[in-house]
Amino acid sequence: MIAAIVLDIEGTTSSLSHVRDHFFPYSRQRVSEWLRRSDEDISRIVEEVRAAVDRPAASLDEVAAVLREWIDADLKTAPLKSLQGLIWRAGFATGELVSHVYEDVPAALRAWRADGVDLHVFSSGSVLAQQLWFRHTQHGDLSELLSGHFDTVNAGPKREPGSYAAIGAAIDVPADRILFLSDTAAELDAARMAGWRAVQVIRPDDGTQPAAGHPSVAALDDVRLDDILPTPHPGGLK
Image 1 (cartoon, rainbow, N blue to C red):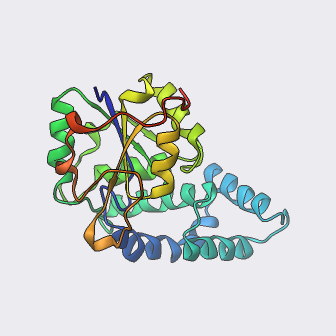
Image 2 (image 1 turned 90 degrees about the vertical axis):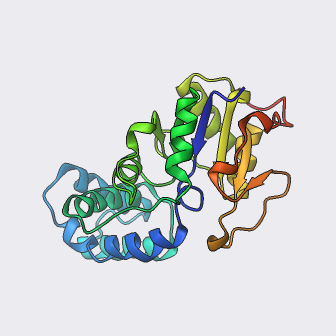
């Protein structure tokens, strides 16, 4: 019955600590330098930050300070995620950065694809950052296994049912044939409200708390697609 699987990244396919301990500091140290680059994307990001804090005349130093505060607070703002994607792309290109996926992930993705299941990603990180992440893992390039990427810009907030309805429409798969895998209870709830099936991934090293009302697994190879029950929200969004 499952025709498509949509995956979260942090806490699901990849360790939360790897992102926070390696990728956040890497981008934080380079914010000021990148904001001074003559680039259309950078100019847009600067204006988006100024608008977000309602300070249209903010200097580049002030914008950089705001972005560093957002990194420290792990805020899921679009301009921050866009800038991090650009910085991380440069880090991947030089070999300074390598992304992390759990050991069970490559085999699970390949098995699902072999069974004809389409795989997509929905993460607060930008589409660019997602694509780079799966292209530069410690297991090599896994990006060819993924059919599409969604973030808070092209889909919407991860805790809103409408975002999941939008993804379902974009991939043209009925809601009850989509499975969402995430570690976060509010995201799983939103997916279920949109009519999707949902399973929580609880990685022992991430300290994830069980989400009430959702089945759970400790690894992707524990997912049994034939055993996943339909959503209990038949009146959910389509």
